[in-house]
Image 1 (tube, rainbow, N blue to C red):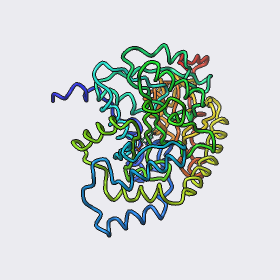
Image 2 (cartoon, protein in one colour):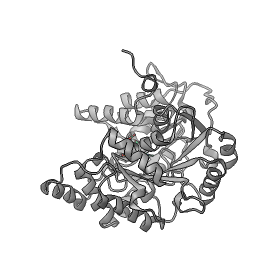
Image 3 (cartoon, protein in one colour):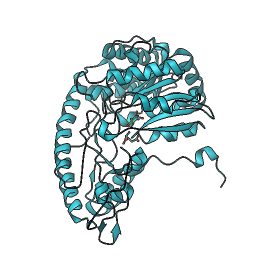
Image 4 (tube, rainbow, N blue to C red):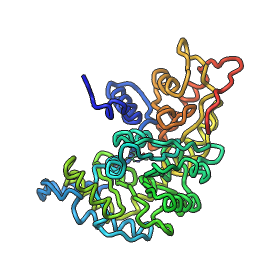
Length: 407
Ligand code: PMP
Ligand code: GLU
């Protein structure tokens, strides 16, 4: 069948594909530990669920405005003002079906054939693919583990061309846990002004960051009209399935996204929008409680991984992922299976040790694997025990020279 060349070249989301495999195995009764998709295991807080139920009972089940209900757009602007001290009008916000969809809308509205979008690597798996759906070109900017994955302004400058339209930045970052400093963010904003491009700041993990560590680029001098903030309720309020995200930015861009959305998905679910209002207006201590729990889990995961010979790990500062290097195992064997790369490492780990992890390659960092610790302490411990056993079972070549990998 002949498909559109744009879609033909798009890969399936590696994280969602792995999650589907993990959930299918689990459903069929296999005892498998899930360190795969980044999905908090907490239930959505009660008062948010109640708001969704109340919306159904009140028959709030019809079409809404394409950009989302005013009540939610106002709540989004108010929350950003409260959290970061920046003022936006509700008309500068648009509600989307998840943050992924907000990123998609921004890229569709801003980028055309021939435009370049700079993506610091390691990156979240969906960024390059979303850029390709617009016919634009992802330009990967390598960041180094030895430098704490920071965005080096000199290397960034070298990646900028006349075609650069957008830089996508994700702090706290998936998969590395990097948190951008004020200086890093300011140089990014300054370069955006100097070279006339935009900054998409994906802040989906920002509310879960340790206090006073996250710097939103929108709060910095000269950021007005350069920065587009993307966020959502999935991670901070444990609402992945409700599918509510948003973008905040320059009015003409938001209006373009609104027109586009009105022809594509109309608007996100009416019921979910009401639940999101309750999340943003309600007691914010639910977020801190979850964040504190993630902090404990981070310690357990990091300390546990560091005790496994062959795993090397830079400490994640935020989000809920560990991104260890496992390339010392490459060339090794488990039974007859040769572990060649991060994909075969993750595949064999699921087949043999029954632990779901994501290979580093789709994040632009071959040599690594990603483990989500958004799961219970018991699950983390069970998974770590299995991983240690798995690592022991890999017969490594006598003199294993890890392949040269960036970072
Ligand atoms: N950005 C990043 C960095 C993510 O890890 C995710 C994963 N959920 C998203 C955006 C999208 O989140 P959602 O579409 O569930 O709001
Ligand atoms: N963002 C999460 C992850 O990276 C959820 C899956 C997805 O949307 O890609 O695992």
